[in-house]
Image (cartoon, rainbow, N blue to C red; front, side, top):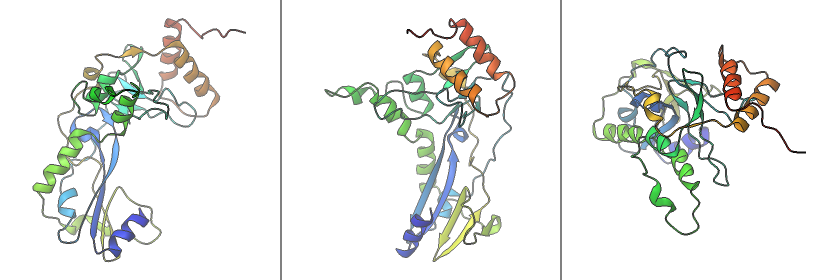
Amino acid sequence: MRHITDALGDLGYAWAYRVVDARAFGLPQRRQRVLMVASRTDDPRTVLFGEDAGMPVEGNPDLYPCGFYWTEGVRGLGWAVNAVPTLKGGSTLGIASPPAVRLPSGEIVTPGLIDSERLQGFDPDWTAPAVQAVGVRPGHRWRLVGNAVSVRMASWVGHRLSHQIEYSADHETPLAPGDSWPSAAWGVQGRTFRVHESLWPVNAPYEDLGGFLEESRLLSARATAGFLRRARSGKLRFPPGFLDDVENHLDRMGGFPTVAA
């Protein structure tokens, strides 16, 4: 960030950035992205700042589906109540790795490709034309979904570019050299300021995660067992009852898979 902002300043730009969460726009995906605007003639603060709904209180995990990374278990979990963690593009080989979702019933599922498209704000099968060319793997669609910007987030930026809000400096403080970079800041002519606004510029009507799981599948016994092994060998702390649900799901799926000698 220091390299980018210094380069913009050297070129005569005023700049502003803000980390924004896709959940603010009603999508049940915790997807935080850095939005940056820079201009030599206009004030970029009028585009990114001036709206701040504040992050709402997290829902009860016993009542809502909760997303997590089943591919993790040692370094992180990505736990999200009534949302999935950030959708990823999958492996370099085009192998999909969608997050898992623990349902209130205790079952564990993974969203399908169309579910994930909709979690980004796309229409169903939006990425289907991408694999019509010869030699393009179906897994490429997962990469397109995982690497995309949420449609509603992009729409908000476009709206603000044409409907700017006059900026007030009453909620900013100077950012001293060596300070950690905040979630929102702006700068001009070598001066940098922290802006005290949240990751939720708006609070659009929220769509529950359950409504996006139309083609989900049960997490396989192999995947569940692998997650449990990693979880038990690490030192992560898990939400109460979560690992019990994972173990019960594994039992329903047939237990630990046998490995041939």
